[in-house]
Length: 287
Image 1 (cartoon, rainbow, N blue to C red):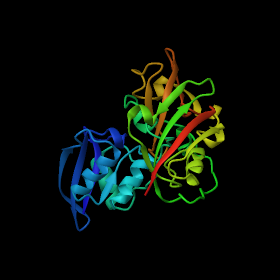
Image 2 (image 1 turned 90 degrees about the vertical axis):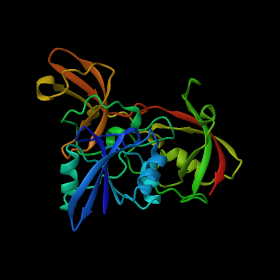
Image 3 (image 1 turned 180 degrees about the vertical axis):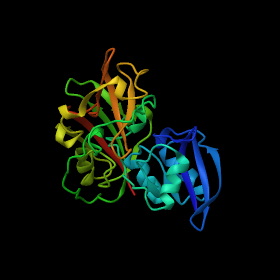
Image 4 (image 1 turned 120 degrees about the vertical axis):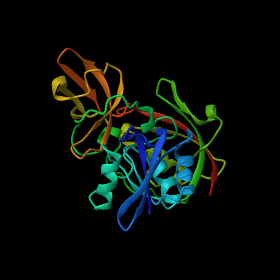
C-alpha cells in the first residue's frame, strides 16, 4: 500500500489543490517501511489526482478539499481521508490503526475561482466553531438533483454576476469550459439543477436566491476570541484569509474581520453567503 499526505514541514498541508509537496509512505503488513517527499509540480486538482495515480497511490490524507478534487480522486481509484491536520506521520499511523475519519469534501463550489484554494495558509489556529463544515456555505440539505444529465460529466461555459451587473466569475474569460459531474455535489445546488435538464448547445439564464447558492449569512459563524487563547493568532491582520480548526481538527476557512490588542474576530461565512447570484450557462458537452 502507498499513502500520500499533503505535506509542509512535517505537517499536513491544508489545501489539496495548492500543496507543493506530498509525503509518500510505503506500507507493508500495516506498518510504514519507508517514506519520502515529492513535489506536486504546481498541478491543479485533476492533474494532482493523475499525478498520485501515476505514483501508485492507494490513499490520500489531506486537510481541505473540494468536491471536484474528491471526484477526480474517485475516478483514479484513490481512497480519500480528508479533514486531517497536525503531524503527517501521526496521521498515517492513526489511519493504519483505523482511527482517522474522512470528512469528505469540505468546501462548496459554484465553479472555478471560488474554492477552498482561495484561502491563505497563514492562520491555522486551534479553535473554530461547531463541528460542521457550514462555514464553507451551502451545507443546508437540498433535494437530489434529477434530470437527463444527472450523474454525467458536463462541460459548461458560464458567466456569474451580482444583481447590479458586476461580474464575479467567468469561464469565458479563462477560455476553458468548466467540467463537473452533474448532481455529484461539486456545484452549488441551483447551478447543478439548471444544467441537469439542459441540451448541448443550449444557453440558459438563471437567478439564484441565497438558499440555492451559498446559503444565508449565519451570525453564529462570526466568532470573537481572546488572542491569548489562540496561539498563532498574534500575527494575523484584519482582512486575512485563514484556516481555523473545529474540535475534530477539521479545517474551517475564515476571514479575520477585526482585531484589537486583546481580541480577534473571524467570519466563517462563505464570501458569497447571503447573496443572490445570476448565471449565464452554456452547456458545451455531456460525456
